[in-house]
Length: 325
Image 1: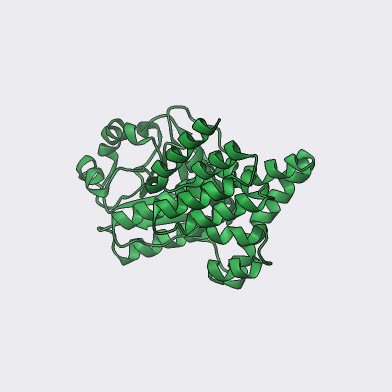
Image 2: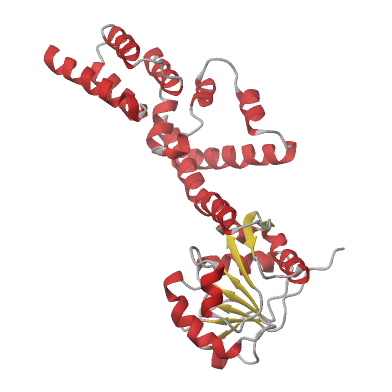
């Protein structure tokens, strides 16, 4: 049986909010002892199995590892409190979003190697992402931190801070988008008569199962989409919406699941492959609009998914409708 990695003693966790607690939960779940940790936080949050101190002066011996988990705007205040406790042998891992390594070095000149880490909340269940970056850490420090963060999920070292930020923007904000998508699926189920409990469970299991299947099979996402395409039905329409997460997810999902008329589906498909000329699109929409009594609804739906460069065409069409009315 593989032995769990050990945290350096002592390890200071300076500030322990939601992300800090998620990391501690993940380490606890991985069998990593939290005994070397001292949470340094004026609020002295109650955390099982972890020592607490309100200030660095109360935390005991100087730390070998410091994890900065405070809010970015507090960095100047916290750095001032830590300066006298840090040495060239103290590794500093910063969880602060937007505070670059150079800025940290300026505030903590006597510290050892400074490392930036951008985790996301799923590290609490060891299925998270922790992007790492340092232009100071040697191979031994990198390996030590890799051993500590790998049990929390995927922990890649990034070549520069731009790539670190890229991972952070996807993995950090991603859970909120996914959660909203799950909520949208559940709401769509409720609108079709499912109970809240059943709809919520179906939505959650659908997303969890899809992610698990993709991870287990190791297939490209495009391949997975093709396998799920049962024909020219609702699943088929997913291929025309690769950027759906950038839109209002709940409204878009509900509308897509309720797209049981040909006109709506056809308009959705066309929005991803717009015709070369605006005039051509306008002509097609006008022709189709004449064949339905739901002109206002058609215009509303079309405008919601249109690209900016055809907005004027829709305004033109709206004016024509007003004149006709």
